[in-house]
Image 1 (cartoon, rainbow, N blue to C red):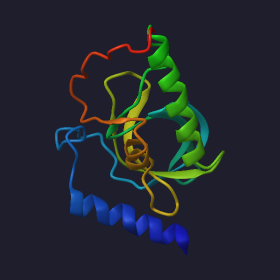
Image 2 (tube, rainbow, N blue to C red):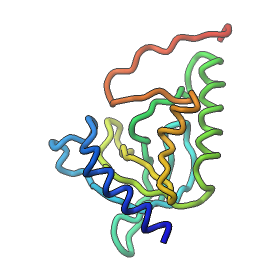
Image 3 (spheres, helix red, strand yellow):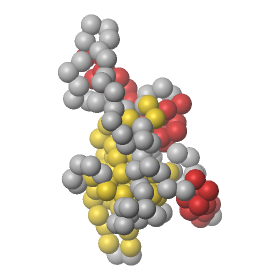
Image 4 (cartoon, rainbow, N blue to C red):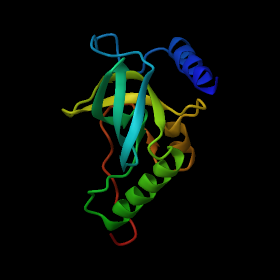
Amino acid sequence: MERFRHLVIAIVSQFVLGPTPEASAADRYGIAGPVAAEILRIVDGDTILVNARPWPQQTVEVLIRIRGIDAPEIRARCAAIRMAAREAKAHLAQLLPASGTVFLTNVSGDKYFGRVVADVFLEDGSNPAQEMIAAGLALPYDGGRKPAAACHAGG
């Protein structure tokens, strides 16, 4: 029953919130979802590797860039940014169920090959992107140009 509740929330949110800037009507290959996906690995604070089930008896292993957030980069030159990135990754790992199921909605292509962008929801309807922003571990991101990251603390 809880899973059904989440699916209803995800579908209703698509009608209420409408499309996001990254998933415009021009993206004719987008998928509204929800698409169930098993978490395989947390890549960083805004990217996960999943085994998605877009239709019965089919799975696709794909990197998901979580829509709406930008977390610090693990490969940054600055030590302070790398440390913040590890903290963001660890927090996202706490938010997402280990090898659990998430639901993807508003799925669209990303600017990098082999990765897609999607809204990610847990079975209880919670949105890890919002929780990462609230925790101060990610910034809101609309898909546009990112400001240059400043290095602090002697990194």
